[in-house]
Image (cartoon, rainbow, N blue to C red; front, side, top):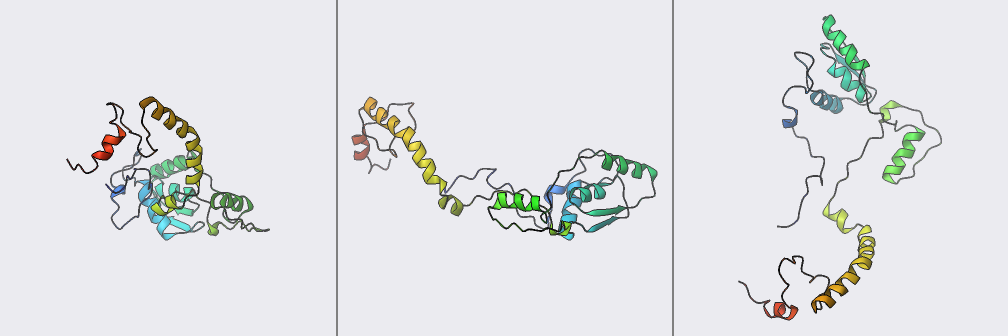
Length: 205
């Protein structure tokens, strides 16, 4: 085994041309031909920018308008059915959407600075929605980021103050002289004497 990979180490993955995660119907389906919001969301995010106008000539239950409103797109929907228009209207009026700061604003620049650590604050902002929003970030853990993490030394020093006295007490109680990398992890059986383990290093059984 080369390394241990946890399921939450990479919370994002590359999207290809086969969308296996969009199969099936909408979760809380209220209309007979309602499309899953994830499908419409991916199409809108691939083809439009914040502030663009999205047209849906077959409104249905208003999924396109719902997703467009959520991601800062203007929208126009059309339908001939009063039932579908009533459903779409009720869906939009009764929905709660996440709030994002405009990237082209003083508040957005401060938030971006707190996330990225860059201090690029201007005097005047135009509030242009086409510059996008300050989105949430997903951490990406790599072996390089772990190796170059300056916090490792800080963490090691902090825990050495706790673990070193425990190692000395363990050695005194067992009559051994274990180094920190030699301390046995499994104490269900008495640990073998340190000298015996050194003598048996060439044993391949």
